Image (cartoon, rainbow, N blue to C red; front, top):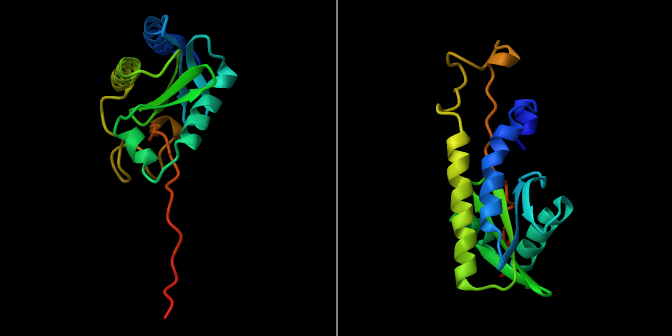
Length: 173
């Protein structure tokens, strides 16, 4: 994720704390963890999960648990989970930027709490890596019309989830 924005040099420095956090969270009951960006790219992995498996697992959980308020539930911090064969998969969203995908041996309240703690740790690290000042507004001192590309700041807005809208009803008389 950050490689696209930092030119690759800073990627190792930025991702090391995330990888350490994932590695510390993985153990006997929490068998794997991954961070997936909004484009579906796995940016950090730990345990028995592959890069090609992380986003499809998250998508399957969200598809099976789809409801009118799923996006709202995830954005307010809920951890959703689903049993798939002999393992459970839990999904959460950290700061509207990264999916936190965890593979569990079973789905218990204590393990879901561990996933929530992992999500909170990721969110805290994301906060630490955000720029300290707000993005410039159009017509301000920087950015806007006439600015060179070096003056324009990149702003990451987060994950976009489709909103399910009910079908229009036609009134019959």
